[in-house]
Length: 263
Ligand SMILES: CC(C)(COP(=O)(O)OP(=O)(O)OC[C@H]1O[C@@H](n2cnc3c(N)ncnc32)[C@H](O)[C@@H]1OP(=O)(O)O)[C@@H](O)C(=O)NCCC(=O)NCCS
Image 1: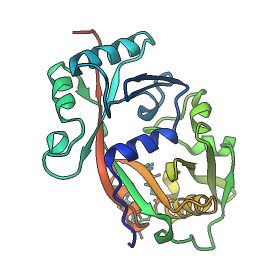
Image 2 (image 1 turned 120 degrees about the vertical axis):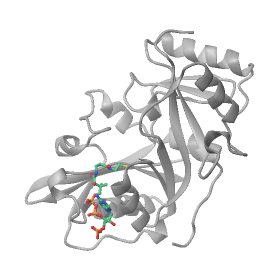
Image 3 (image 1 turned 45 degrees about the vertical axis):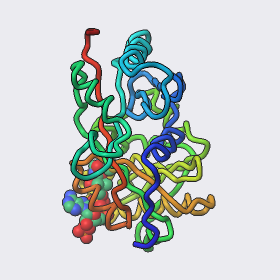
Image 4 (image 1 turned 30 degrees about the vertical axis):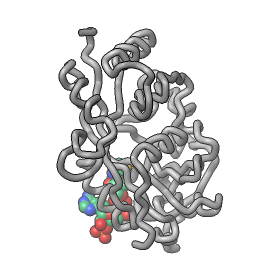
């Protein structure tokens, strides 16, 4: 693929936050705090990048108190470079923080993820044969297919789904019924693809590819030429799909979740 993109981890992490904007936001120096009632990791994390204006341990206490006051478990996203060394590798932006959280009993949430990027020009256009329609809001059909970590979305998911400056929702139909969906958003000069889901009985039939291509094309029509997505490290099906579409791994991240009782 031409145009493999490798932006700085911190830049890309901040971009992703513009695509999935929690209503409840705070700041601790340059750290960002987000809450949206617990739905999705990306809307309920502290992003610990930049100058926090406090010693590290005190900053973690402040983050924990912010979430406690909302009756939510405190969660911190820990971005890390790929390859050996993990979060402690040279150049890892959160190495000492990850060690401190581990020492305090913050556990790693299941499903660490990879951020992948692509140049939209390298993704291609899906072939005729699959009709993919696009809408500015998720329809009942779209919502009937969408899953987050295998579960249907809660009623208040709509606020987050519509939280980017611009987004579109793709639905592919097979045999007259919705069979696959996905969301694309545009913000901060990037497209973001999310919520790609193919109904179990329609997998391996090209719908995931068709939806991914249609979403990327919709973003290209908005004048954007690069796209990111986040995928669980262990989701080999999705990673294979995206790799075939031209995406490449850029960095990884995991979430550290505070123990239930403060220590
Ligand atoms: C991942 C997912 C979207 C793939 O959709 P799909 O319609 O089956 O994908 P496609 O048929 O377009 O597959 C394209 C290519 O991706 C790869 N691929 C897809 N599923 C795969 C699997 N289970 N194992 C290995 N490779 C796979 C293959 O290279 C495939 O090409 P091939 O069938 O010619 O070998 C689908 O499995 C799904 O909905 N999973 C649950 C939700 C999910 O994980 N979404 C992604 C969140 S980031």
